[in-house]
Image (tube, rainbow, N blue to C red; front, side, top):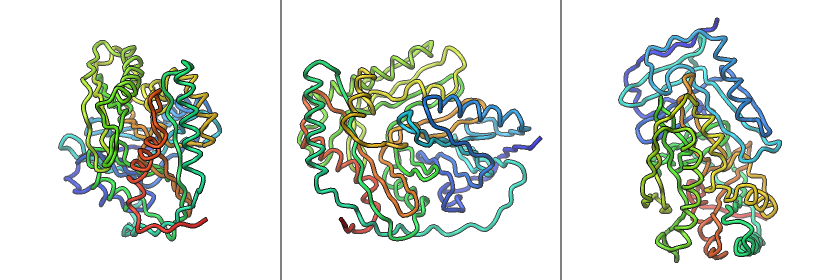
Length: 394
């Protein structure tokens, strides 16, 4: 049987510097995180059963390996990085197990290897290229119509909240090195979970779920303010939007926990926006792995709306947009079932020269289309501001 070995190592320093290749897998949060490279195994999946299929594939892969884990911490031993589509259509979700993993958590550092990987020389990260942003002359007008229609449905009592998203597309003027983007995002948003997983790069402020032994936690965000914003976080509109999101996460986690603490909402200040946030922490009542929890939480009211079926139906009708892996779970899981799964926000998908950014807003009965447009612009800035002075083409 193939051997998976994890051994303690000296502190490697900045984990971003440990990633030797542009296609390295990265997961950073504060001073902790992981950098992986090489592909020991890869699994692509689509459809409504994508989460369970990925879990089953990982279990089957583990059953054919001999694991020697001399660290025994969350993230040691075999680890799979994952990125899943928002919707259950034909889009591609992915699970990747790296051949080599360098990680740091709780003051400990370690290396995991699968088999006997070679260690070729790495490459120096490339600077980010220029971008030609593709013009959409009617985008703002279309957005106003979408939000206005959603507000009408909410005021008519058909649903309570829907989250609408939009995308911005660009053409890269040269090679894109995710390591450079992640490094800049990590410097600007050190409190976020910064990631690069199979062409998806971002800095998410929202933890869908983290599981470490019997401990589980979540960070729910809904309600946004930004420099120049005219609404603020102290309005009834924001309170309603946030409460719906927090309640949806609490309902799911309570079914799996013997004890659950839902903390009072607080303001979470980031470099470009400020969110209303609720921390949830608890103790699991039974053995359930992190990805299963994430699959049952997804999609929360923070990225879909409520009631779920009505909100999903309306956003599919109004957005005319394939979200891909935007707003889907992104993160990692180890052989014990520990892991962290965030909602893929403040992110971009890169495929060859094509760059695609996303942003969304929670729409409730008091939403104003112009204000929601400016909110998406502020959120898009998290990625757009990484690049040089933009140009625009039709």
